[in-house]
Structures are given as structure tokens and as C-alpha cells.
Length: 263
Ligand SMILES: [Zn+2]
Image 1 (tube, protein in one colour):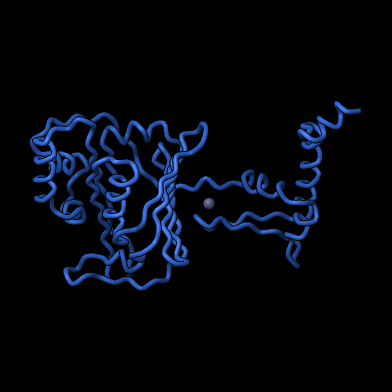
Image 2 (cartoon, rainbow, N blue to C red):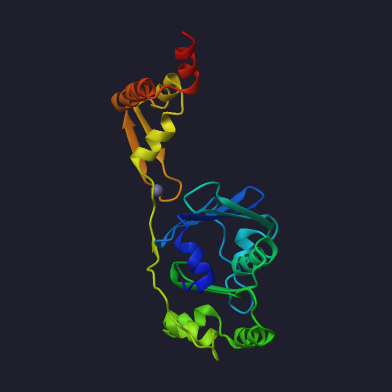
């Protein structure tokens, strides 16, 4: 995916971005970081695949036309940035464009495409384009980009033709001098780990941790993004409880510090 420089600049310092849309009880989550790691979660993956009469995939049918798009950007320090807008169409590119216009007041062109094999519904190719205007862009620049966008073929057509990301950028920005500043490989990657699950376990009481073990004597945490199963035996759960108490003794809480000062 190509990111124009203003967005890219933000993304460079951004440790984590996530988009969540929900429509009724259907939640769709997408998380990415500045290293190009991307993961996604769809609460209801068994929805039927439908197409518009022109053959385009009907994404809105799966996402839902009413709901909320919630965007969170964590730059790794302080409070994360959170923006929220109502879905306007359920077509992801239109909702992202609307999000930038409404929540961040950045005029944006977003084009996305995914081509499915109509037999087995496997993704054959996918890609996207995002163009954002810098403050102070002239009317002439806006007109030129609007003209280019009108003439732009659908993303899937350009990708199916074998056009590279550079060629797609040059086409979308015809008439402008294009400078390529950086390139990042995008890949599916999940950041779940045993350590993160242990961090979640230690927020529970001892009895709650013990009760996580099933009748076979194992606690199993399944990552809802990558579906990886993280298993803990009863003995490992006891070790987590022991470790929790040892850490608590090493790091007195505000309350215990206060008690120590009062005695
Ligand atoms: Zn995972």
C-alpha cells in the first residue's frame, strides 16, 4: 500500500493503529504498525459473498451500512489518538475517506480493491491507494487530482494488469513530479505471545487463575486474530500465581507504601 508523505510521516512514529467498525453485533478489527505488520479480525466470517451487478465485490453487505468506525492511533507515548465517525456506506474506502474528512479534516482520496476467486472465494490480489492534501494545496492541484481520480481504473484492474505500486502512484498523480521517499513491505503478522497472556492472567485473583484450567487440567487462550492456541498446565498456572506474589513483594503498591510510612 502506498502512503503519501503526510500520512507516512505520521505512520513512521506510530507504533500501532487500529480501525474497528461495528454494525449491530458484527465487529471488524484491523490493526497495523509502522513496520508494515497487519492483522485483522472479523467477528462473523461466515457471511455470504455477494457481488454488485457490475461484478464488484459487495463489501457493504458484509460490513453493514450503519455502524461506527473507530480509529485509534498509538504513537507510543501518552494518550492514544482516538477518532470516531458513523459509517456512511459500508464500503471501506468511502468510510475511510469520510473519516479523514470529518474527524481529521484532511481531504483524502482512498481507493481499495480486492479480487476474489469466484469459485473458492480465496483472495487473488488486493491493494490500496491513499492520497492526502497538504495544508495550503491550491485549487489547481485539487482540480488536477480530481481529474486523475476520475480517470483512474479500479484498483483491482490496475493490479490484475500487473502494474506496480510505483506505476499506480504515477498514474494517480499524473502531471505532478513524484518523489519516492520510502518503501515498506506489508505482511500479515500477529504480535500475540505467552508473555502478553501471562500479563493478562496476573490481573486476576489466585482463585480465578486456578479456575481457568479445564477438566483436562489445561488453560487455553486462543488469540482471536491468528487463532494460535496458547496452553498453560495447572503447574504453569501455579507458577504464574507464585511469580505474581513475588513481583508484588518486590514492587510495593501505593497502599502498602502508605502503610509502611504510617507504621
Ligand atoms: Zn495472535
